[in-house]
Length: 120
Image (cartoon, rainbow, N blue to C red; front, side):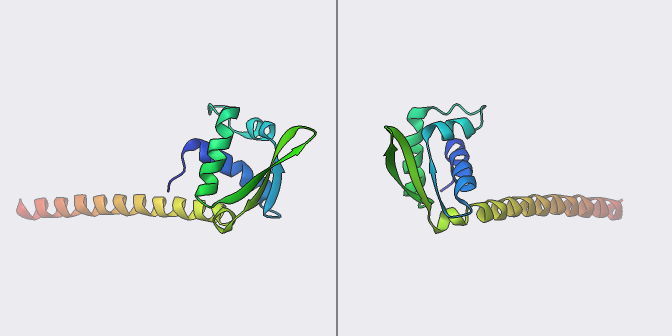
């Protein structure tokens, strides 16, 4: 599944927090303060987005309360640990596809020019 912008931004932040130990504790305020400001991400969207990422097996999480403040206890799963590497691999494949398309178009133009010059 391809992540939407909100899921991607949240996963970026969680990965950044959890990459050393594979786990982290974060509050909804931490999340909102670290999500891109140009993204309209509201507190009531955190839970559904967290559930979607958990369903995709990026991480497991639980609710912890300290002094009546909600804290998410997050543990990265295998897919979550590979998140950054998979992102780089996807980017590399897209670049390779674009280069292949450009080379193919260039060869097509070159063949056309050669055929036209032979025909004349």
